[in-house]
Amino acid sequence: MSAIEYALPPGATTGHLWQLRVAGEIRVQTVDWVAPLPEGLVADYSTPDGDVCVSQVLVPLGCDRCPSTTNHIAQGRWGDELTLICIRCGAAWNPRWSGGDVEASRTLLKQIIVESGFTPGTGVGDTVEEIRDELQADLWTPSRADQQLANDLVLGVHGDPGPEAIAQCMKSTLDWQLRSLRFSEALARTVGMLRAPGGEADPEAQNLLDFVMDLARTIAAMAPDRLRHEPEAGPGTH
Image (cartoon, rainbow, N blue to C red; front, side, top):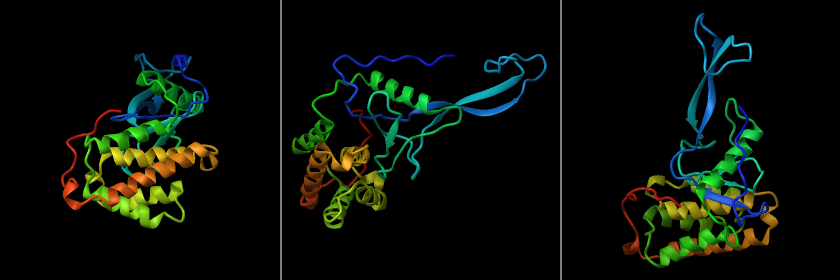
C-alpha cells in the first residue's frame, strides 16, 4: 500500500519550522511479529506469495529518556523527518519504530502538520509569547514546582543557557506532575528550536531563548501566595 500524499497547507512555506504540541499520544502502526501463515488462513498483511502472516499493532511513541508518551512537541520543516521534544524532560529525538523508516517519519510529520489545522504566523516564538501573555492575563497559574524549575534555570544556566542545560534542569526538577503544562511547553519549544540544525547560531532561536529566560525570571520572582499548590485539572490542546 502506498503512503498517503499530503499537500503543504495554504499560506505555509517549506522553510517554516513547525512546532506543534500533540495532546495525547502519537500512535504508529508497527510490526509486532512475523510467523508462517497457518494452513487455510488468509492474512490481512502478507508477502506477495501469501505465505507469511504479519501482525501489526498500534503503539505510542514514547520519550527516549523518560516514561512520557503524551503532549510531545512535533517539530520539523516540510519534508523533514519527524523530531519529537518531550515537555517532561526536554529530550529531543527522531522516533523509530518497527516497520517504519525515514520516509514513514517524514510522512508522519506531514500528517501531524496537515491535521493540526494550524496556520503559521511570523515565527516559532509566537506561541511562547502567547504563553507569556496567558500568564499575565491569569489564564494559567505557575506552581511551586514551576518556581523551583525557574530558580534552577536562572541560577544554573546563566553561564550556559544551551539546550542540554535547560533539558537537564527539566529532567532533574522534582514533582513533574505539579509543573504547569504551559511553562514546560515554553521550555520544550525553546530546546527544540535551539537543537534544530543551525539553531544555536540562529538569531530567532537566541531571541526565543532570551524570551523564555525572562519568563523564568518572572516566575522565580513571584510571591508564594500567587503560586498553585495542586496539579492542573488536565492538559489542554494547543
